Length: 373
Image (cartoon, rainbow, N blue to C red; front, side, top):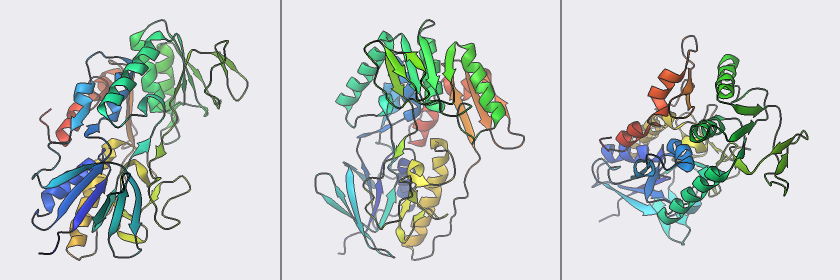
């Protein structure tokens, strides 16, 4: 009997886990193997990690680290815990194989690349439970012991850290240093960015704009110096700069990766020149903000097109992008939200807390992965 072809997914995060669930529903187990390769034996819910890094209150890690037991709807897939270090594939309508860190090779008929991002600081999460527990403990101690905290970067991660730290202590000095003239970036309108700034200042968070921190080392005198020469008192530096795509293993033809090392894809989310390789999530080059709430749409397009391709038909499902929407928690009871449809409405503490800050999308995420709550 001929060996069943493998539908391989690299990365079990917000996009990859959903692709696995959808394929397990649409592909017949007697015809195809579904293999999810992921470095961790559990799904990591990143939006909860900011609060988890600051405090053990609520023991969020018990809900934010989610086993993959229910990922495959029909129980017709398998997991490989490991890291992919290279891809071997020829251009055109052909399969290939991926090579794991230990040398094992996994053949694929179709391949999905959803490797996510590489973060700094507290969000640079280890791959095993023991090291993850120690990582959390270390950062909780750092935050508890620090009095003068500098958050480097002015995106959503820094803003949410500021809110959690202010919840922890009314007296800690918290400063955000951001290279633009307003917080966040120009994907969001100026009126929303100004409102976010005002909300932070109401909570006594200092904001330094139009400046950067190049050297994250603190001097013996407890000082850091910004690029513009401003000296800031600090006993803890938290890098909150944007992440990098986790694409170092993508050893395909030159031009597959963009100048920023994102994977170049067409509207069908097929990788350029490789019709049997798809990509989604943080790692793709697409003009939109990288947000897990969009990745159900990525996953739907990818799964639909794989099912079509395996029937020897031309993939036709297209990803057309999503409206920009963001909800930023400001501690457990506050926040700011924006939606780019209609007149571009914004929402304050009440709506933002109900939508995100209280639960951090944990219930929604667990249901997506097949759990009841």
